[in-house]
Length: 585
Image 1 (cartoon, one colour):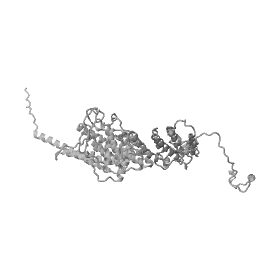
Image 2 (cartoon, helix red, strand yellow):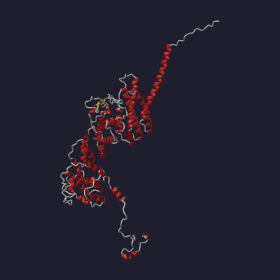
Image 3 (cartoon, one colour):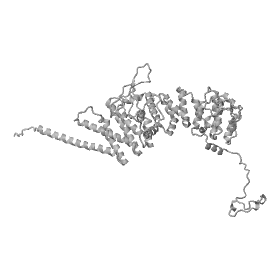
Image 4 (spheres, helix red, strand yellow):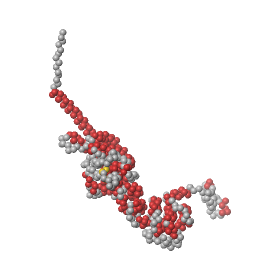
């Protein structure tokens, strides 16, 4: 029996209904995305507002939340400025809006560096420097070359230099982990700091014309003195920590934003174009490590040692133009010969600063000696009045300043040349001997070995020991003469040393008697006498081991109060004692 089969009919869906259904689904999906986007954008605005909250915990949480929002966008390049987007381009509009809020977030984070709470300053510094790394990498990938987001870093440097609440933890965090370790962060800090300080001082340099408009703060007047004082305090506090600088190009190998030339090949670079301002390119420099006859190649400024020295020099010159306080003035002179001069491309730029300091007198002159002497001996600075000024520095105040030991150790170097005129050396010997008459013992024990060494080094001056003058009234030496070549010291004598042999301090009198013996002993090591003070001299006396007991020529007392004060010595045994004092006898 045949089974009748139902004819198969193909179900054909209505194409119009399918299109409508797909469109509805897309519209609903877009509506959900728009709703989520609106919520997301509203959250960004709210978090930026929370960055100004009174509670430090709220500010801390808001900054970290915004960092988690913007860091993926930076890595993906979603914050790049659109190229001439149409007016109705919604994506470009959202991108611009995000960029504006990102800039607001950066400003809030930089402002947090000035908060009095150190617990917010350090996280803010870490966040903004992490953003610097992300922004530099993203723009470098987009542009096809190395990039340093100096526009962002400029804001960080400006916030640090103008920070009115610079805490020690913030200073240590920046200088030890970033500024003193990474070559690119140090390079651009020095460059930006010089620009900021020069702008505050009202100066304008030619190279400033290439900077973005937001850096061309053309001021008709310098900044107020309070701002200059703050710039000086913060800039010096940071620069004071810089104890090492690269001395060879191969030492430039640590970079926060990546090596400009990781392959070691000489390439063109994308300059330090600013991620959120108009693009710019730094000047390309020639490779100074090549021979002059070789073809010039273009290198990134970060890879050239000379550029590091130039920005270091520009920064220090800008700082030296600020109105110094006496404390910072002295601190700068203490480090100028070790930490500044060796890293300058032209050390003679400090000539005016050091000569003015040397002419200032007092402790400032003492501290300027070393730096000025280095310029004279190593960099051909012509300063004919050096020894004349040095001679004038020997006055009574010198023997009481805390820089006395440093001064004598340097003068020992200055007078070490056997080619110095005998009249000049005799003037210094006589000047120190005369000052020894009114100096504290701690200073005299420096003067005596110093004179002994000078006499051994310059035998012509030995006639001072055998001179005929026996006192100040018959002395031909003119102590008031400021020119050592005119004081007539060589025709005098060292009668002052004979006077010091009768000094009340046993250390001084014993040491001065060395001039009564023949000059057969070797020269003294002056370093052994520079650190003497009253405390060390007293400690040496009490720590000496003495033989036996000291003899006393004093009779034992027989009482405190005697009833009959007119009693004779024979009646001492019968003297009565005031009642109540019997236990004392």
